[in-house]
Image 1: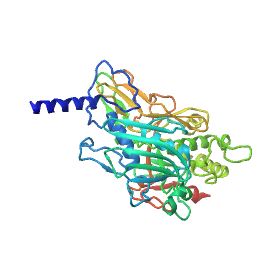
Image 2: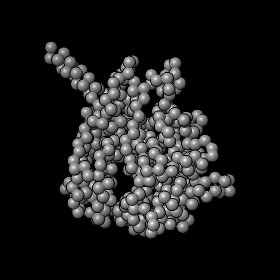
Image 3: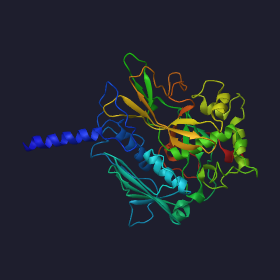
Image 4: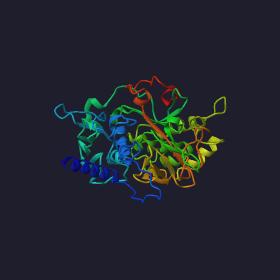
Length: 430
């Protein structure tokens, strides 16, 4: 009797876990023909939420098959442990309140505003994160971390760069800057959305690509309907992604970002390019980068056409300039899809960027496999963006840090990434 009672309790616990979703779920009713997704499925909403956290805080880009077992944990790599007596408290530099809340929103897929005082995000089977605004001279905000699968991290202190001391700086000129382009071994182009910056304690670079590999696409066979293609293993760094789209809008219309004094418009770049400081790059420097992006080479190609050749049908430049007008609203798919439990509804995680300031909002899309219409975010056979991605002006992007592009080996801020080919670098062309 005792064994039966224990088994029944475990069964109830498993069912409860399966039915529970994260705090930001859309709570939509299941479709008429439900398809069960088990709690240990890699595309359950719990798994996707955990991967978002581990990707950002522990450099885990995909979950193993045993992700839901006690055997799997990941060690935190985010930030720096400044107090040897408190190694589970790690500090990271932010430029202010806007970047602090963006770190929390990036982890939780929420839309909290700059003046959020405190917010707790929870997800059954994953854990909880609690954001607390401090607004002190040595600490902008904290994030208390209670994620059992994440080892060695109990709190993130988001601090001004000077609070990191000598640990948060490097000497010399950073090798890469905003708008630089490299090509990896797969002939895919990557755009630098934020370079390293010593004064802000930013030592790594951040890169995005509009070109996807077959491993970034899940093929969903649907009897009686066309095959659907869903995103996977994209990465999910949204704060840096906002800088990318802000930069691309600048390239499309540089004059829209110049104020009456000939400087970068502070309403669009309140903390300078990449949120790194107003003197990081001037309007003249940014304008020169924009000119280099639109300059044609001997084959009459531009950086735009190279970076977007797998996204648009020709003519690439004309389509780019249309889609990236500063006033246009853009929609971006930026991480793995998830599967609603006990239904055949999928969530495509999407952000929208509005206006010159590229204000970021959640714009997630729900799609059912039972619909006649496909959800083809990518057609890797035709090697181009498809026309039915759930949004007009919708894009799919991959993210990697400089360390990840370098085969997960640390690279100095003043040196080149050894695993890529340099296509364009501002510091080498100025």
